Image (cartoon, rainbow, N blue to C red; front, side):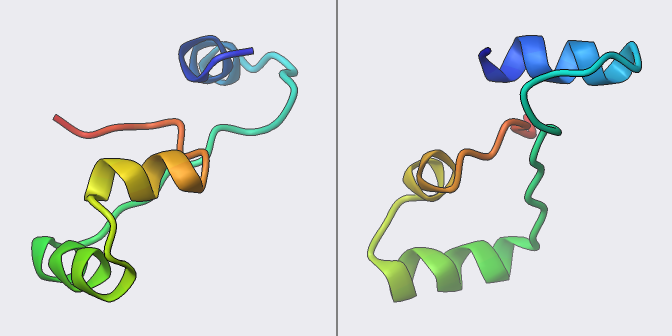
Length: 55
C-alpha cells in the first residue's frame, strides 16, 4: 500500500496496513535536522516512511 492509498483509506475510516505517518516541524528545525543528519528534508521523510507531505 502506498502513502496516498493509506491516507485516503484513513480519511474514509478504513483499515490499512498501518496508520499514515506525519511529521511537522518549523523551518528552523528542518534546517537543524538537515545539518545534523547530513540529509535533505525529503531524504529524511523517506528514511522514516513519512506519508504526508506539505506543499
